[in-house]
Image (cartoon, rainbow, N blue to C red):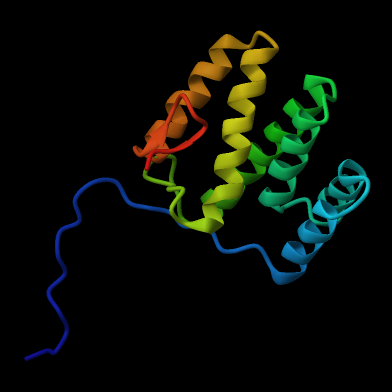
Length: 152
């Protein structure tokens, strides 16, 4: 007789958790945030670490907060979103299932998608903003569509 436990049936869609950002990427993000010119510093971080979802989301948010043309933030968020889809697929995500905010390593992707939703709405891409809003709730049912973040 085996000591192995009996596998229990899983209810609901599977969850995907992205691997955390490497230490050097987190250090570069912290230095960029403390910089006198965070847009330039974050841009350089994105260039050196183009797979960093946190870097793309941070660049988009910084561009938004500085009043840069919305197209620049849109481009950063869209890049983070597409890089995030690549990373999700590499982590086993197959186009459905949860990608929850409660896992810190998923937040760069979710921030990029949320930012894309916001800026798409601002530039008149209503269909895209609506698709992003729906996708966020599908990825994390606790996502609050009106506050760009999870409930609770």
